[in-house]
Image (cartoon, rainbow, N blue to C red; front, side, top):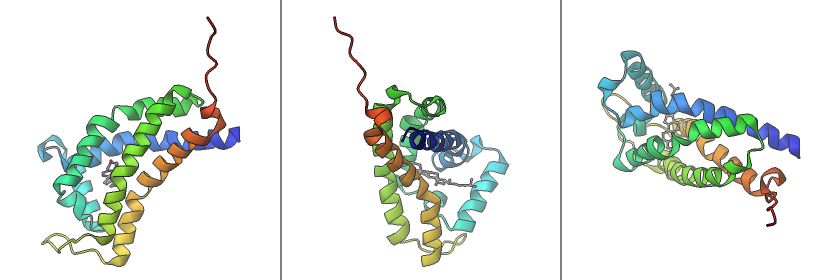
Length: 171
Ligand SMILES: CC(C)CCC[C@@H](C)[C@H]1CC[C@H]2[C@@H]3CC=C4C[C@@H](O)CC[C@]4(C)[C@H]3CC[C@]12C
């Protein structure tokens, strides 16, 4: 059981570690002025939106932007802390923050997935509407951001390593 938890901690470490550059270099392009980014990153983002027909990132609706603001303000400061905690492993102080983080993120990614599956994406002059297959591909790009937080939540709630109460010092 301990080794399963350690394995999961490594997965969480890579998740948070990789999330830092993805958020700064890709995701925040949805809300920050284009002039803040070098042409290469703007091109990368354009390539991604066109190839994957990601209308959400190409022309973000207000509700999606509100999630990206949450990502910048609430989640981003947590990433280096979580990266450190899961790298070291067995850091019980990360339990409550990780529960808060994972519940929050799962709650933002669920409506995103629902919209990717069932929303309207009218053809624009740059990008076609995605067909069923392409919608599923988009879901697979976003899905790790639902699956990993759920794994984090379950680990924090049920792993004996995290559940064990700190022994209180008697006065
Ligand atoms: C060129 C390649 C690297 C681009 C890949 C872009 C992918 C990884 C980006 C594009 C849009 C991004 C998502 C945008 C918004 C949110 C909502 C937030 O609450 C959790 C992260 C999440 C779900 C992001 C996860 C990463 C994401 C799916």
